[in-house]
Amino acid sequence: MVQAIEADAGSQNTANNGKPSDEKLMKERFAKLLLGEDMSGGGKGVSSALALSNAITNTAASVFGEIKRLEPMAAERRARWRKEIDWLLSVTDHIVELVPSKQTSKDGTCMEIMVTKKRTDLRTNIPALRKLDATLIDCLDSSKDQNEFYYSSSKDDGEQKGKNSKKVDKWWIPTPHVPPAGLSESSRKWLQVQKDSVNQVLKAAMAINAQVLAEMEIPESYIESLPKNGRATLGDSIYKSITDEYFDPDYFLSMMGLSSEHEHKIVELKNKIEASVVIWKRKMIHKNEKSSYRSAVSMEKREIFEDRAETILLILKHRYPGIPQSSLDISKIQYNSDVGHAVLESYSRVIESLAYTVLSRIEDVIQADAATQTNHASKKKGCSHKDTPNAKDANASMTLWDFMDWSKLDQGEDGAKKGVKDQSAKDKDAKLLSKPPSLVVTTGKKTSYLENLAGSISPTARH
Image (cartoon, rainbow, N blue to C red; front, side, top):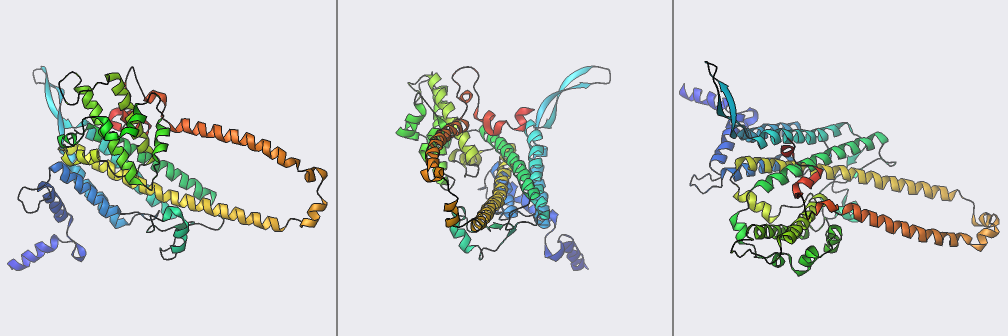
């Protein structure tokens, strides 16, 4: 009888097909968090903040993985993500702060007391991140009605990927295919709407993540690993470019020879610049103290150097959103002890990564459509050439103007004008890509790196 009762109890805690119940899964998940991922119980685990950050990151990696196609998520994976992320975010409901409030007693006396309220940054940013999360999943789900593009297997794409330089490094991602004449106008509009929506999600997630990382304390271990001056960190050439009297951030980055195919070079440059910013800030803090961080450079110039470095970081963040985290970011996450910051940072980072992946899949389809349109247009042009009169008839219809070849002279003049226009267009693009002069501030109110990221600050600063 006892064995039968135990069997019934065990069956209640187990879902269909031998899968553990939600209650059991939740107990296991929070047990790992409380033990700091040290299942031996020996107290060698990580902090609660880092354990929670790792849990959110690992959950997203196991659910989403590498999104290879622009297609809806499986219902099972979507339900699992919703369930497990709700468990992990439920911790923030109990992170509170004390705020003043008024209370009226029975005799009419009004007094001020302190009451608990959910922390402001969590109360504002968690709902915003949930909305961004839902927008991305809705974008994937909306592709179920699209039947104009399709994906072939990696075996069929072997030859095509060798011809396409973009797919050489990502051979495992299937290539999208569209009809011979390209996508319909409605499908193109849908793709553009989805691209704009996901791009806004990416910018918002980047802004929240950047703000949270900026609020985290810089670990002492990171500071101790830095040299005592920015020149040693940056190197002579980079230091000279940043501290020169004339500074153009776009020209500086073009001289670095950066590209999305060489992520290690971008991360290396970001590590150097972030380290120099930390050093310069400490020099300004210790300007009146006897410290190894004291500097002979004036504080005004030091602020200019810092603004220029943050301008470069801002452009790098916008141009290469999918690059790995820098050494400073990793160090902050590793030694962070604020659970609220850990949740916001990891959740926004997961959404940022997912948005970048979805955006890449949308751009793959758009590029396939553009390539197909170009091929279709060239074929039509080739067919029209076949219908032209033969050379003999063409010569018979030629005029003296054609034999004199005055058109080449006109083309030469037009080419010279076109060259001037092209050069002016390049100059205009350079001005647009470069940072506006207002970002490099020498006097007055200082504009921070976060206030310029994604064109707006995160929802916390707006409220």
